[in-house]
Length: 171
Image (cartoon, rainbow, N blue to C red; front, side, top):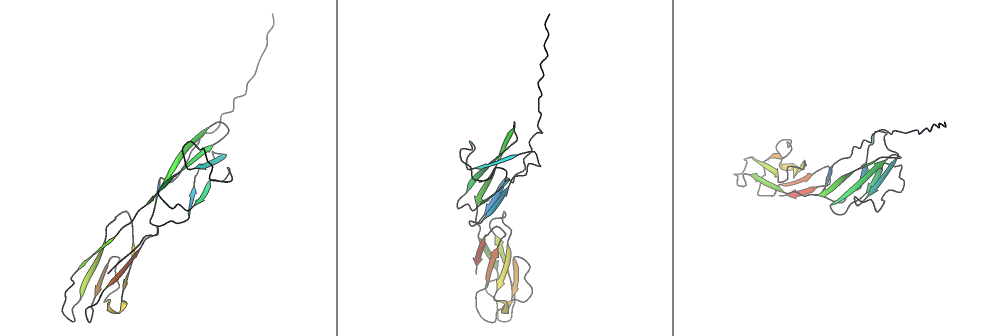
């Protein structure tokens, strides 16, 4: 009777984990650094413009980051892998905008004060507000509200800036 023994070593890789931001909102084309965090479970990172991964946007597959300046709304796909496993996710880049609506008393008597409020028409965007002319501002403006005391009829200007590149002006 003949007996034989065969041995096979099975390598089990860690499950892949991928953390990638879901959506980025911009107002104007801006450089973005997209980063896929695999928590050390991946050896390759393949950035692409499609979920079939027929193109490769990153030059080095060991680099988890991608620098892009999108001109239009788009989706970037990232596939991470180790020798036997692969998972993918995507980042949506959207271009958004906003406008302001100014409200307040627009007819006052000489020497009177009026409070003007700028209402952001897109609550998804947070703005920092700059009011002018500073010579008629009575108190330090608080975000979207300012109190003014104009000596004569004149415009009050507001510029609203957001961290994602949105700039909105009104008067």
